Length: 117
Image 1: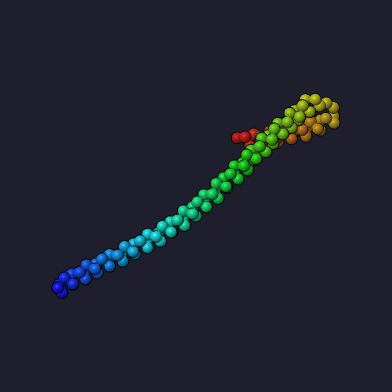
Image 2: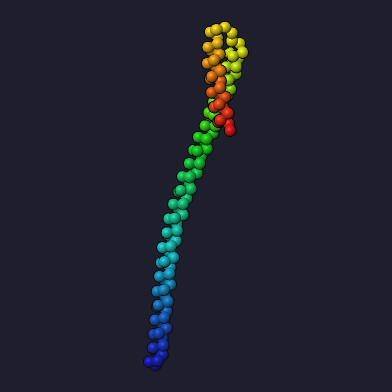
């Protein structure tokens, strides 16, 4: 009888130890899941911020592209006006204006050539 009691007691002790191990493992898993949940929430928040930044940068890029296109159109218009003035100029007063216009035209040519290439 004593042997049976000891055997039962050993079995109960083993079950209690196994139960404690299982509870500890469950607690560890719950802590790990909570930590992973926090990391996931932080990653989601960061992704949202980056998506918003991308949208903002894309809008700024479109605006700058439109500004650049307009600037090149204005440069082209100015070049055409300078060329017209150089062709239509005559007289001594026009000689000075013509020199200034040629200088300005050369600067514009240099600008547009260096910017496009």
